[in-house]
Image (cartoon, rainbow, N blue to C red; front, side, top):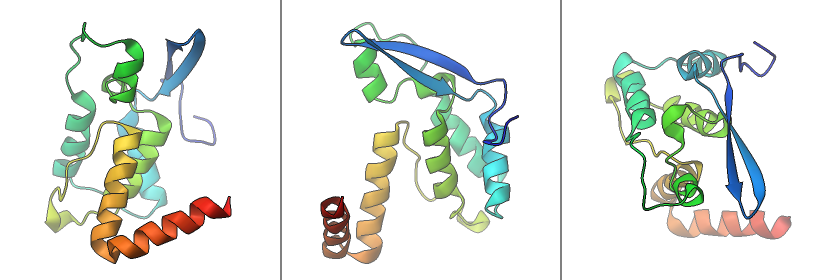
Length: 143
């Protein structure tokens, strides 16, 4: 393993979009990487919670003939063969806040975009819609 924690089991998926090749690196040994990230954060999750992450990754691996490869990528259907580093990092941050006695408080999403939207939704519930939207607006404008 290198300093990022990703080992030789990583594999790349090439996708073509508008003549450009997009490469997604997926991590096959995601359990080890997730456990390592959680260890660095000083957290652990229960087996039930680990099963929830695995269930999210498992998904439906049957080919979908009515969708293009790009549509399936946007829908998050490519995480079934492994977790992308960004997806895995976001999931690690989310599950690190789960408590063992809570079980699985919410279902994890299969795409990075869905995970981020879900995060914003939970922030709005916790802190209020006005505060979150104003904060995100200020952050967007500051760039």
